[in-house]
Structure formats: C-alpha cells, structure tokens
Length: 84
Image (cartoon, rainbow, N blue to C red):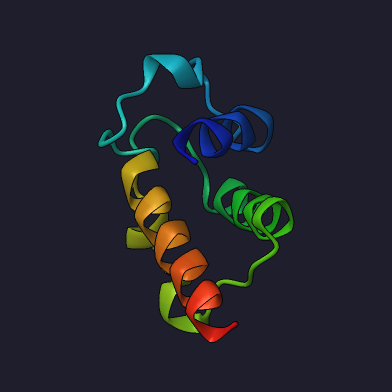
C-alpha cells in the first residue's frame, strides 16, 4: 500500500524532490507539498483504492506524511471490509 501511495504522490504531489528520497514519516508539507496537491492526492487515492475520505480525515494531519496517509487509507480499507 505504501508503494502505491508513493506512486500517487510522485504523480500528483508536485514535490520538488523525488518521492523515493522522502522518509515515510517526513513532513510532506515541509518537503514542498501544497494544500492543492494534498487535495489532488486525496482524489487519486480515493480512485485508486475505491474509497472515500470522511470529513473527519480531511485535515492536514491526515496528509502530513506518507505514514499518516498509509494509516488513514488502511483504516478506511479495514472499515470498508468490515462493512461488507
């Protein structure tokens, strides 16, 4: 899952550095990600994983790092699987 998120960040994140040079817990906003890019990443993740971010996860903290995004997506996938 982390690799897919990294792929989406590389494509939609608009980061001035290569995604493979960013640690999982590094601050993506400090690395140059804009708020607009975080929305683009959110939309790409929703499409790639066939899920929807609830309002409670639409905040800077949820997209602060690759690890934070991965935790959020994993939680949403688990919730979706439990609901089936």
